[in-house]
Image 1: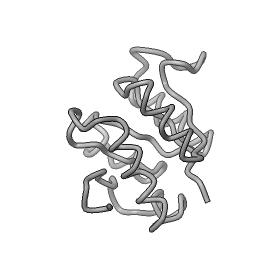
Image 2: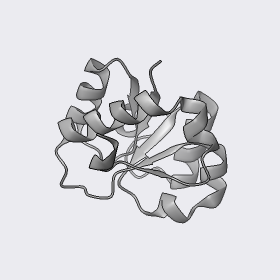
Image 3: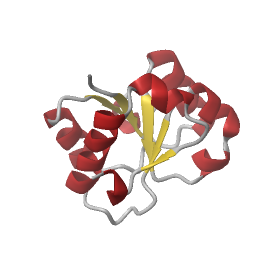
Image 4: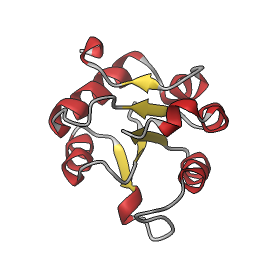
Amino acid sequence: MVFRLLLDEMTEASLSEYCGELGHDVERVVEEPELGRGTSDTVVAEYAENQGRLLVTYDSDFLTDTAAQRKIGVLYQPDDRTPPFETAKVIDAVEEHLEQRQVVDNSGAIHLTSRWL
């Protein structure tokens, strides 16, 4: 199985490319006509929910947004200095252990750390 991902606005374009190369279905907030830079977190979460996508983000606001966490799966990258290729590998490792539904049903955000590797 592959993840359906929505990459938040601060993520790098190369992360999208790497995740796509690993077989994931990827969209970026900055490339979606109904979203784009500066879109509110609420609208991003609604879009992710409506499109059935997990949100990949560095934005810690999604760690405290329990309403969003109950509706969408959040894959949180706590270190924005992690190279995009490494983050993509961690996302792929999460996918080896959890199905998308399990990420959504999780009680909080999944932290994208090397412990998944």
